[in-house]
View 1 (cartoon, rainbow, N blue to C red):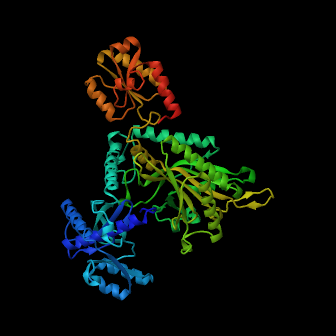
View 2 (view 1 turned 90 degrees about the horizontal axis):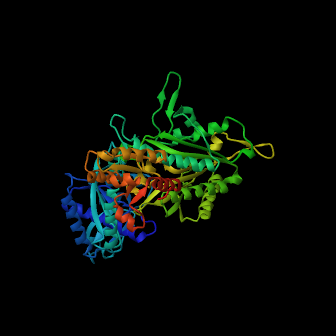
View 3 (view 1 turned 135 degrees about the horizontal axis):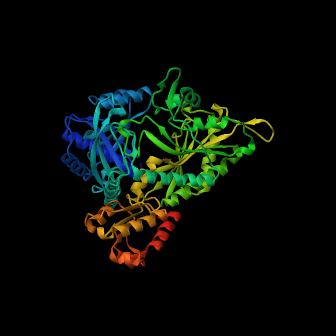
Length: 599
């Protein structure tokens, strides 16, 4: 939703109702689900007598525009449960909602779209809704929305309930904004990491291995390893201690942490001969047990425990999405066990590290969401109101010191502590949630974590859970789309390819290959049997940064002819770089780009 533009949300919500009115005009017996505002638009769910076609969406759009141009007012009023049941008789999904609202003693509101000047007698469409809406359809630009697609959706997200047809729509304040977004979406489709993952031979999925379990091919493993090695290097330099923990643990470990009762994405336990084991969904309980394996004093803190490790979560099959949502996810996970007087400086260290990492990958714009608890539902959380208040204030203060725009989001915290989520913008301006920083006073109580203070007495530390990249799998998907698969040299799985003009120059190409490999560059030697033009096109499709052509001239001069990812040597010469370069000079140049992680 557009939290910074409630007027636009009202437009989108009103369009959802206009869509429902258009669907009822074509299918008078349609059963209505719900039609909320979502990011960049809206959707509405329907139970219909047949599957919808693209032609249906065009017809609905036409009807919606006709309604908009009639300058129709919206009118809302509170109604009783009995009146609601009468108003929506025959609409089983609406009646289901009314039953729930009455049971929970929630107020009920109905909004109607009316004929101008007719009052309630001229009602065109009525829906059960909390608002808000435009006052009149003249506030909606008829050219600034578009119905985009349909999808299946179970009622209330429950696979045991009826499957409805969901119609998605885009909506903006102006046609220009809509056109810009559609253009951006078209570019996003070209960057789809699932498509590029196959084309560039980065990762694959197998039905025999299972849904949500990505396997990285050699090129993808290069990228993945380069990212993790970079993160490890940064953390070691900042005093993190790396550990290794097993992927299984006794069920009791997660009873102690509280996850077994409050975290619904854990996979079922495995019964062995003498105990029940679970596959770990996260790493903090293991790290706490490492901390407890020996005594600690106040001088030992902060202790920064780090691990790049794979966790397993029982994600719903319908929510799996390439690398963005998987069942086996590897985290660059860290747990800072700290004295309370060290909380501020540790948060600053984490956010400082975050800023450096973002800069390396070219993420320039980011903002912070601070997820807090819902005091109206205290049973969902561990700890006292006092501890939650202290933790939330510490995170807000850290975000303020960092200087990024921030927003407090009530009710979105994990059960054991509030958190900072950092969102970044990619090359297309899309927002992605990456870094998570969670302040936790509760798990130290659960695991009885202590340290000996200056006074010689035991004290309770706090824990800061932090993952800079979050899931490396999801981060790779984002980075693939951010760079459109054209990775910077330091990250590219193949940094250069050598193409001999013909087999006659294969021996020289092998010599160049050795010199570049010895220089620490990941290089491939192209097959000389195909035409040079075709081999260049293949290398360009593989988005290899440096394409090096060698022939008689290059062999005589002990050089290579350099082509930079789709640019002929003449273009590079225009930019101030020679097309022909000495091998040693090129090795030095690429080596410098790798060392400096040039984007």
